[in-house]
Image (tube, rainbow, N blue to C red; front, side, top):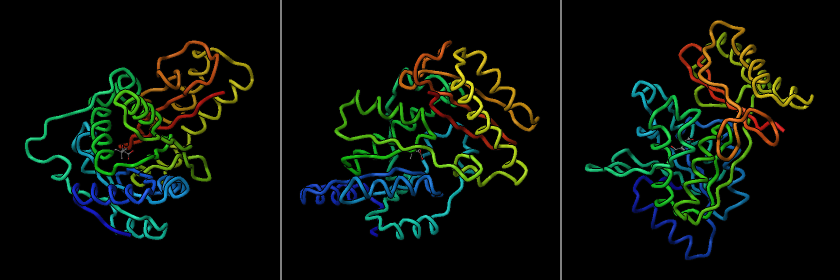
Length: 280
Ligand code: PAF
């Protein structure tokens, strides 16, 4: 596995692979890799002749610098995991490569960045869209893979790619869960044993909502009431939002009349967790 740290070298490497008529598959990450990321890398290997994984903890997408500082990092472990999967390139640019002195541009994906996490993390999706657009210009992939745990992020990136004519296939893959249902996330490492147990209310709420819909319930208000009740059984949980919305426009719905996104964000102690499912 080759480790590349500069934009210039990354662009040259990808141009050379393209001249060899190889397809480049790309998995952008912020590191502290777990099975969710590794499943994206495995799928990238099926879809591309060569695979690039980036690790860059992007300061522009953290609306609180304390959250950025606390974001877990373990480069040595990440490197080992990616080597084992035969990743071709690990792109690990230092911050000054991505945001050099004088940097002042941004990508804004307007409507779909507003609700859900966008309403509680001002500037977050501006930071995500900007860094992903920049990484696309550095890695020049044919396809890029993202996890659906960050469902709104997938919607924002798909919209950006369409709007700005990036010639890149965006592939989103289902959330990978622990055996007990907890969605895998780098932030789970910050949960105490008791908080981790408490966090299971989120996947329980998603399952209960799916059961209601399977049983014929179509009222968003009724479903959300049941979700809120499950989430607030434990006083440790602070619900940021629970929303039923259209899976492409992210507009809230009152009636379930087709596939509908149930998206949840909660705080368990000091840790913010998000999860979602598309109800059918
Ligand atoms: O999902 C993430 O890890 C990040 O938001 C991403 C897409 C790598 C951009 O920094």
